[in-house]
Amino acid sequence: MRHFHFGHHEHGRDWHAMRHGFFGGRPEGGRGRGGERRRMFESGELRLVLLKLIEEQPRHGYDLIREIENRSGGAYAPSPGVVYPTMTLLLDMGLAEEETSEGPRKLLAITDAGRAHLAERAGEVETAMARLSALAKVSERTDAAPVRRAMQNLKAALQDRLSADGVTRDVQLEVARIIDEAASRIERL
Image (cartoon, rainbow, N blue to C red; front, side, top):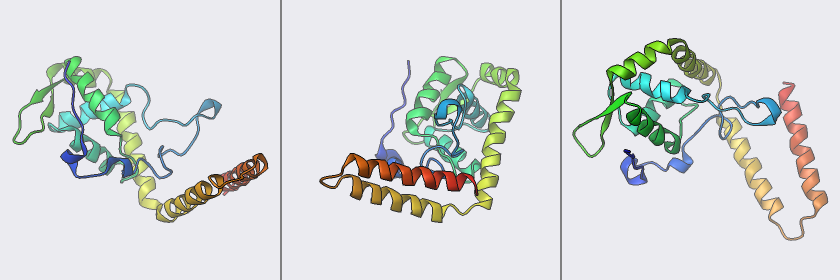
């Protein structure tokens, strides 16, 4: 089994600070059934997106992350902790192969089996790629900087207030009520 190793030194970026969406994690910002957060891609869709991108041209992991971020208008970038294991899976499934390149990183290239896999699932591929395009359109229409600033302000206020000595259960409940009220007001906008 092949494994891709990820390290900050390879990419010169602090991945913990990388944006993963407008609202701190999931670009859809919505909730699925039962109140759980929805994922950007359903099970297996990220694999198809990565395969589609390497069909266009051989790519390494960081390239794949950056390309998805670009195609989403900067609103979404999958984490290396999801991308690199998926790349390994593509290799293990025979859908991709390593291609040597200049430099330490190995490029992933699509195989004939990978092309056939994409053809068999053309509808799913189109849906997943359309989701990235739709997210880019939302990103173009939305300047999320004020929202991100306000969210950071809320996070700091919560950390300061809730980490203070003597915080009672009543204070915690009041904080939760205020946040719930703000969420309701935002939903009605």
